[in-house]
Length: 170
Image (tube, rainbow, N blue to C red; front, side):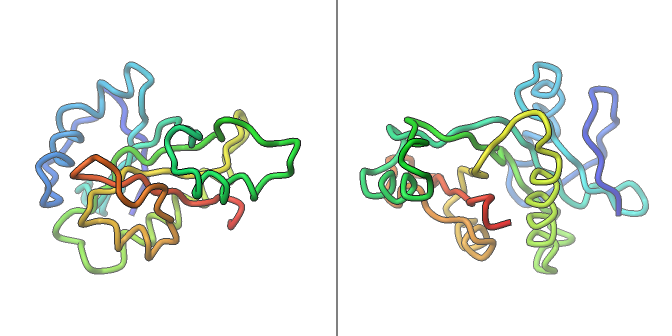
């Protein structure tokens, strides 16, 4: 297996994770996002060049206005009093998908651990404290298994919930 960053000239092979939105992002939007510096997408390739999984990363923040008062107090306790801000830097996992061929084999959790390690080790130009994700409702157990916590449990959005992972745990 090989992990590569998607470039605008890369010829994408077919990919199906069982979710039309995630498939569509990779096949129709990921290159445009990279070209406009909105998000970078990484492909996990099999030995024959097939796309096993992919994820996209972009900048984000956790801000006071995006949380409940109780959650914000809990987050603030992680920092010394003189380091309390109205927001804290994060990297967002914008998309995360595993091919239907490889689902249920633990590959998603292995890839998530790799993401955490890679962003932690390559934080040379900008600091961040959290990984965030807008998790599809059906994917929440996967993110909880990978130590993400709910930012707000009852958001107005019917399809996703914002979750975070504290990188200090690494």
